Image 1: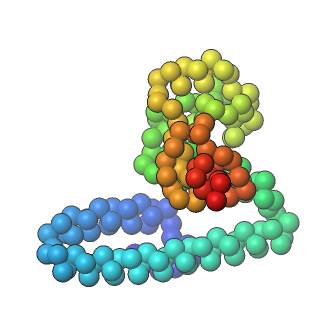
Image 2 (image 1 turned 120 degrees about the vertical axis):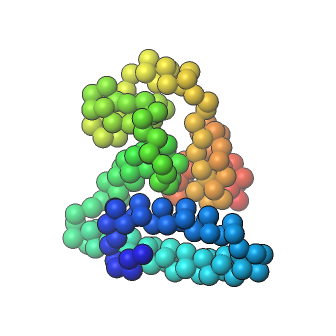
Length: 170
């Protein structure tokens, strides 16, 4: 795996494939070997998470300092990237945009709970939102603090993101 600042998108996908291969190898290990492998994996993942956090923070501060980015623009882009897999849950996942409802104006995935498309700004029709809602179970979102998945209508939107009732009252 590349250790450079910027891994290409292809390398990102290769990392996911490598994770799957490692899972298969892991199944063949005995208990002590599994424990040691898990410890090493946790240490490596912590290192990567810290490096990613540092990189993102540096990039955002640089863009803000140059006047090229506002917090609002960052929030909109965050939602756009989050919706790329068809689910607005604060993380990336497998490409399930094919199952997501789409904007009639631009054809990109939309959240039927929104009134406007986050890509083109077109007004989303209630009919398409109703049709999409009728086909699916209530939309689940992940709490930004504890990670618990809950129906969207039960969470609170805060500066930290969507949070569950338990985390909201803490």
